[in-house]
Figure 1 (cartoon, one colour):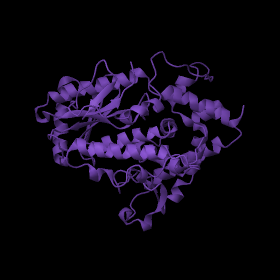
Figure 2: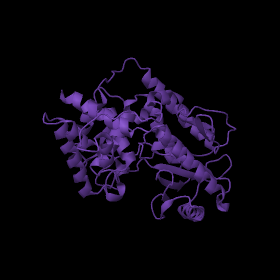
Figure 3: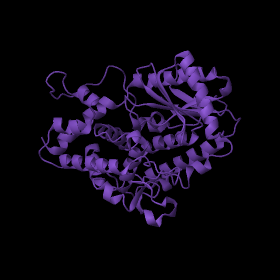
Length: 415
């Protein structure tokens, strides 16, 4: 069996295990509705809406992924704003309500973070949840990541695969000084922009300008302008018949991705990763990045000049680089098999789902009996299509297939 065919098998088995099934979607929708009922009971949050964002909205979450939720304060038709102290107060009120109504366990209020967060674990299969206040920028970033799935469905597979690999090497934890999941997604985007032939364009070609600066005024107008701009530019890129098409398999892309960052620590000394321009940028030539106070710079293309990897420490960057280098050595070695690849590319709980409980033999997992979600290529055709503007942002259909927020529908798999 060839090296690439062996890797293809392992990649497909990992993706088969970690890709959400229908039940995973339904559980998260139920959690959102649970929290909505709790928020409606809080007097200080009268009129507020409960809106998901993050990997759930981007369709980049795994079966064990957490759920990010924003409580949007009422401000008529206009985008609401609140200071850090107000957000801390409101989250404190939610914390009291969660305790009173028994909405979850392991409650943790991180009040002094740059963005105050209330963390808890839902009683619905122990899904971890992060609640923030007025995180409209997070919502729009999540939507753009969803929309670019339309360009190439391999992005979805690569992000899931890279997340699981990073967890296996314990480099997907910002609290421990390594990458958060958003940074990992941006690294995949950057690789897609710089591989040959390129799969993605620079993100400035999808949305020119600094997206967060355009979140002002009437919310529906701001959101629609961003959505229409991205949609037009994505369609323009897809319809460009002059561009070369990259036809590599996900396994081949993964090998190249790992190799690209195998010397990350030495590159990070002078260069920053800029998905907005789709290039490595000289830090000393970029005044908005100076002074250099971070071990590595992965710029947020939608909120420049924020560094999404600001939590990465110098010591952990060395560990991260070693993980890339070690994996690249294995992937390019002739001395590999399915077990050695799986052990390197997936965390323990995924390995247990693939290997036999007794003896550790390798077998190919079958599809769960629960219906699997529609593939990203199909889903992207429905990406946040506009519906009637009069629809309540908090409404959800118990029988239909959409969750509606602020007059836009989030794709939901058929039941």
